[in-house]
Amino acid sequence: MKARRLFTVPLALLVAAWIGAPGASTGQSEEKVDYLTQVKPILEGFCYECHGEDRTRREANLRLDIKEKAFADLGGYPNIAPGDPDDSELYIRVSTEFAEMRMPPYEAGTQLNDEQVETIRLWILQGAEWPEEEGGEEEEVETDG
Image (cartoon, rainbow, N blue to C red; front, side, top):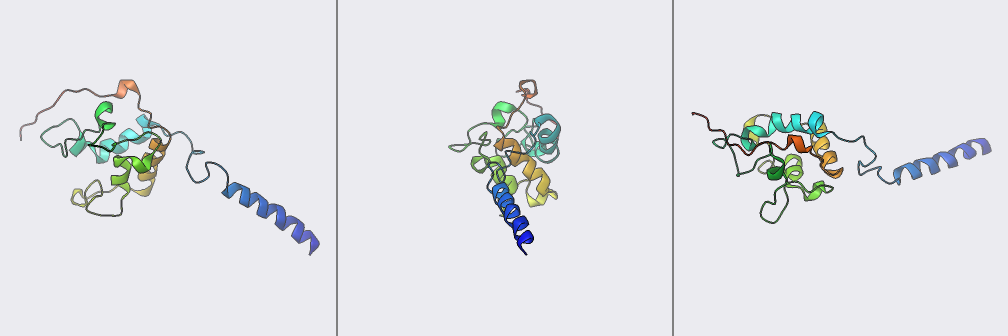
C-alpha cells in the first residue's frame, strides 16, 4: 500500500503541473503555423470565391487575398488581430455556432472542419505572420457573367 501511494503522489503532481503549464491550453506550445502551406490553402479553398480578387463576386467588400485588406479594420473591429483570435472577425466567423453568422455560409455547401478552424486560430494566436511577397496585388479582375 505504501509503495502504491509513493507512485500516486508524484504522478498526481506531474499531471497537475502539466495542466497548469503555460501554453498548455493556449496553443502557444504548438508547432508554428505556416501561412503559405497551412493557412493560405484554407483561405483559397473556402474564402477567396467570395472574398478574393473578382469584384463581381466579392461579398461585404472584404478581401482575404491581399494582406492589407485581410488585416483591415472593419469599422471598429479588426478582421485579423494578430495574437488575439477572439478579437479577430475572421476567426469569430469561421468558428461561431450561429449558422446565420458562420462562414462560409451554409448555402455554400461546405464548411471548415475543426482542424482547419484550429489552424486559423493558432495562426492568429501566434501573430498571424503573412510573408510580404504573398501580399497580393491590388489589381481588380472583372469577369463576364
